[in-house]
Length: 113
Length: 113
Image (cartoon, rainbow over all chains, first blue to last red; front, top):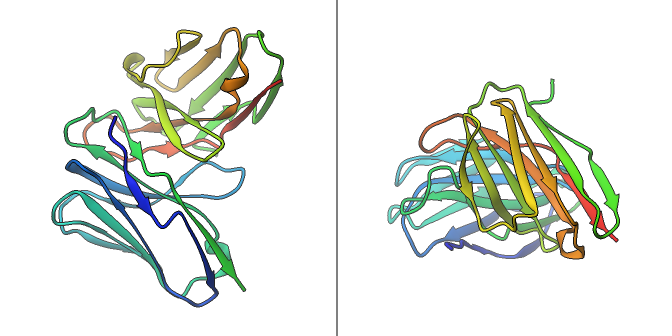
């Protein structure tokens, strides 16, 4: 089935630095979603994108739906220790079911205070 | 006030046993899901239900049988548990329709020994 290529796999950064991660697919996606998962918890939705070119912010987080509809990125500015976790991209493949959300393999973010 | 709640949070059992995981959502959503997260943190959909009807069965062994008694509940029963079933299982829900985001429960960590 469709898989999303998410990079980088992991990042080690200093508090205060900006972070960027992205996700690409081989097919067109109708939605792009970004989730954060902390240890022992379920994924929590951060940002949802519905239109090509859409740029959306949520506090220090900014995400964009790529113009080609085959990619998305997430930026975190001025990182803080509580940003630690696994960040997942996800989306609905335009050629697949709307009841199926496909996930990337995640980016593990570590922030050193 | 938990939106999507699943029980138990931890489940340790022997090979060959039968076990169930329960899920309830109080968001008024029509669609519910079961996802499996493996040891590498990869999230993969197992089942989707919409208004109690099975929509997606993502080539899951028939030892796994979901049951939705009503729109707010989606339980997962697993027969003849195998070592490879060890994983974290997440229940999620979303509003019916196209391009909507899913909200996840806290997960059930299943360990088969």
